[in-house]
Image (cartoon, rainbow, N blue to C red):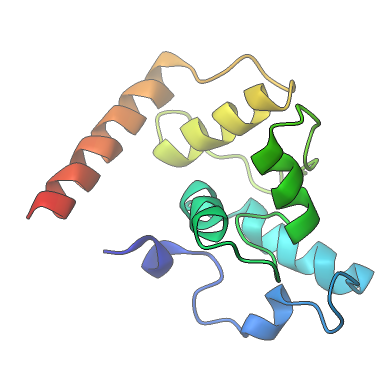
Length: 132
């Protein structure tokens, strides 16, 4: 299964994740799109896709184009502040990804052992699917 098939935005209108005027987001639209991204289990894959494919419009991986530029340049600046809308349980790859992002942004200490183990399992399953 491709990462897009697991995305929280799957089946939603793409218009929500793309600004009407380049780089000029209506505040409510931006907040709604980022709230959906905050619950998504594949934000890292989505963000990596946008960076790899030089996406200059829209929200990808929970970040706008300007935020992705800052992230890619490695400025060390906290890119975005997420609100924890739904607490993810420990021992999941999604929680591992969140804890990694938070640690990078200076918010947390990094993933716990349960989350590391879940990430190892998810990574191994992903490699097995890719090699199948």
